[in-house]
Image (cartoon, rainbow, N blue to C red; front, side, top):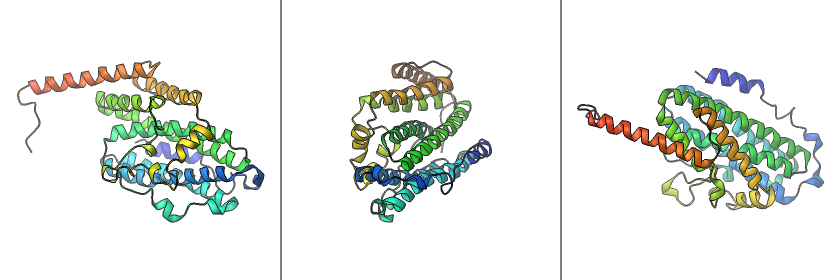
Length: 294
């Protein structure tokens, strides 16, 4: 099991919201209304770890190890929301999200393949680490800068934990896992070719609620994310390339094959998909190898 070891590792570096954040360093002259509004939107977005955890537990009922790890991930992600709300309550209470605004992002996600969801959230942690690092650079108020730096480190550690579960999945499922991880990897490393930011909170997850079936679409300001990325923290092509490089680097290590570009990864995806199709065809050609009757 990975959970006991991951628990110890994350517990050893866990920060204390009361004593490790330098609240007394707050400088009111360095926080604008526009910046406070972005902190509010981030706080609500982080609250969406609640429905994500419900999804993970539902779709991984056969995996008690990973489900137990969710207790750590969920705690730390909700703590991210809490520390951002605490910042607003202390210094700009008029911007603190209401309980109704938080509850609005708790909605059911449609079932999805567990392996693809695992890879999706690994990429999401990589991207969020870079978003928060850039946010820390954009802000000038020292307390919120420290908070974003702290959250960025947490997201990096979460990505590392997901990577451990991906490595375990490769050993257990082989090409099925390779196909799932490379498929989602191609999607999530191709953000520069899409009109929207590719992150789990910005993807459609409940067909019956479309178009209000993304976390971002259910925020008080559904358009804030693009404004935050493009004109505020200026998450430009240089930063986007850093995300792509981290995804490709980690997949190269995981698959034991070098991916210098998304095109390399896509070629690998096609190879694995073809292997799976050939294996399925060979199995179907063997008498008695078909699916068992219900």
